[in-house]
Image 1 (cartoon, rainbow, N blue to C red):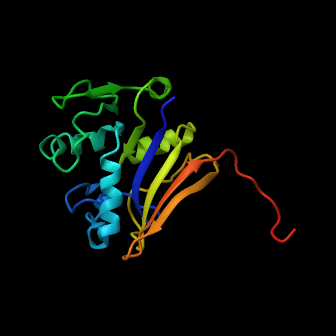
Image 2 (tube, rainbow, N blue to C red; image 1 turned 90 degrees about the horizontal axis):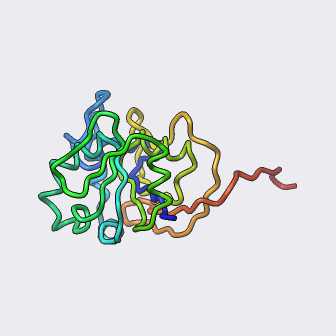
Length: 198
């Protein structure tokens, strides 16, 4: 079975919208596109580069895919595997793309079938609604989060309605010179409770 790995840049209040640039996603009147840029340092760049060079296939929502398909085919010098990896796109409206290795799927059942198949781990970037669907159906094996020291208030959030209770174990973490916490969490069963001090 392939691992489903969610990679996300988030603010302290969980906003994940438009981290990469001012024009990336202005929906809902979002005004802070490109909020990640001021936090880059050598540690951050190395962490991102490590993720981009891992063998992977990709699961994307339609909106993220449509942002990517105009950009990444022409910038594979920065992300060598993005054109070669299979890009599974969850969409009810799209059926094809000129971007090679793009496969369109429609249902959670399709995602489960892909997860059960043989192949590379599956990375999920962006795609907020898709990530919420994966969490709701307990399909996320690992969260790789870059938690930035700012609050954005309004914007698309990583965790929203429908998120199921789930426990994770911190597997790896580092803090950059700009205060970004880069952390990997692995799925660890059900939420446990108890009384503090008992």
